[in-house]
Image 1 (spheres, rainbow, N blue to C red):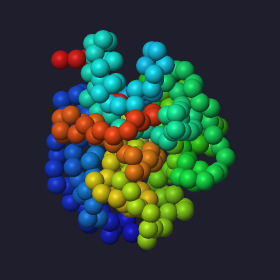
Image 2: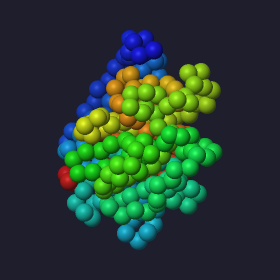
Image 3: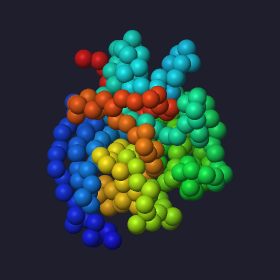
Length: 247
């Protein structure tokens, strides 16, 4: 499977942003188009966003960008980063700037979040990691920012065991993968509906990420201004973003 998938990869376009090491590009893999944004956790300011100082949910990328302006910063990349309830509260574990707003959820359940194993995207000083939830609890890493979602897409180089190659559930999907050393962080969003198996293969075989986590589907959105992307829609819950000093 891996060899066959690798031969079908065609990289169409490479477009680098000007924000530190972050780069966004358009790739095709197995006949599907994806937008890939790659960051360096040693250089890029990767953060999670949920509520402003007044407790109001940001909900949109432009709301975050406007709030950052007062800090002399600007948003150069963002995407939705985990599942949420109707009030936009995170379904799973959520930490922002060292403050835990939702505990870790370990139980299986209905929906994609409960399709165990799920995992946590953890941002620390100089690194970021996707960590399977059981391992996350055992290791208890000191995350400055964290968001739990599910299912895991890739676990130690293997696809999630419940993914079906011919799965009929297809949505526009987004997620994140991390390298073993925690330095490389790759965010991806599909251009058309894909199933979990195909999306997992993207991270494992094309992007070569040993760990990858599904953020969401159907509501998936991207902010990458240097690519002309500023996806709009109804309000989001947790959002992951990269900032830089305003220019």
